[in-house]
Image (cartoon, rainbow, N blue to C red; front, side, top):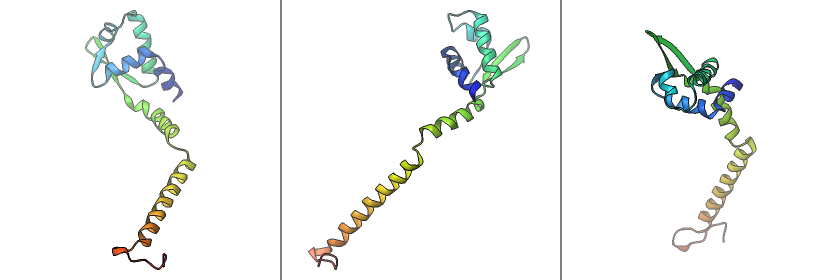
Length: 122
């Protein structure tokens, strides 16, 4: 997870990942979209490949790069855990819901149809 987090910390690498969503590209095609040098793009691709975010395969004489989003799963699960309310938040939300439901039920029991009073209000 640390390697993936480190890899996506760089904005160029994040842009490369976005480029590779749903397609495969060569290093040259990727480099063409940036103002940095081709060797710099190759270094970025190596970092992405080493942490498993990018896969490469030879197609004739060309090396094609594609996204492998599965490498993001562990990091995404950790982020979801951090974003989720703490256990107490869930319990307090449930308590608030129960208090509102109980108040509503009591209010409904106090006022019977046609203005009749119930046992609780008599």
